[in-house]
Every structure is written in structure tokens, then in C-alpha cells.
Amino acid sequence: MSKNKNFPTVPLNEVPAHIEDSKAEGHRPVVLVVDDESVIADTLAEILTRSGYAGVAEYDADSALETALLMPPEMLITDVVLPGMTGIELAITVRRIFPDCKIILFSGQASTADLLASARADGHHFTLLNKPLHPQDLLARVSEGLKPRKRVAVEAR
Image (cartoon, rainbow, N blue to C red; front, side, top):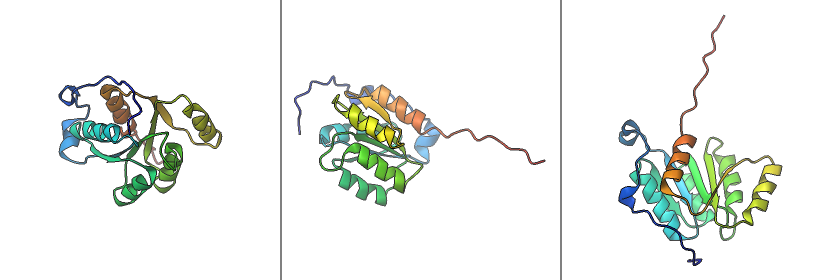
């Protein structure tokens, strides 16, 4: 479904890998990418896969939920504007099922600010990126979002 937008292209061979080799050989974090424009979802999933993640593309919220139940994601990257359920509703549902799942929303439409403000008012806080997404920016956000949090050691006395 083309919306006649001119996005700059970056050849896949120019997309840098931002994930350490040790992660690439072992566990590959599942990152679910949802966009009703299949070329965007497929491209982002491919970039993530080539960078050491398990990128999985879906094109609507219902299919994304089915996939998430079969293959729990560590991160959800979703367009805000989807047919049927919005990306924000999808993010809230995924977060209820998988509380540790990291969420990144993206959109090419200014009207999504109202949807995001409404979600924030209900206590949901998500990162919003604007389309077009540059692969390096996306990989930096994914890498930062999936970094293990440092645990604070508590001494027993």
C-alpha cells in the first residue's frame, strides 16, 4: 500500500551491524516489526536480522498478536496508524501480555501526536520515532532499548 512518499534509500550492504558478535552467535533477540506498508516492515525486519536480531515482519495488529503469542518479542516496533487496531492499542496489548517487552512506535503522520498524548494520559509511555527512519538511528534505538539493565548489588548485613 503506497502512500506516495519519497523516502531516501540506504543499500542494505551499507547498514552497519550494531550488535556484538557474541550476541549474534548466541541468543538473537526477537524484534517484531509491524507496518501496513509491507515494504517498510520487510525492510526493517531484514535490517534487524542482518544486524544480529531475529527481525519478524507483520502487516497488521491481529497478525502481530498471533505471531507474538507464538514467538514472544523482546521488542515491538510498530507504526501508529494500522488498519483496525492502532499501533498504540497493539503496544498496550503486547505490554499487558509481555510486561518486559520494549516498545518503539513510529509514524509519518503528525496526527498521531493526539493518540500518543491520550495513551500517556492513561499511563502508557512509549518512544515515538518519525518516518522516515534511518537504519543507523533505528539500530541505535533498538540496541539501547535491549541493553541489559545493570543490577544493583544489595549487601546482606
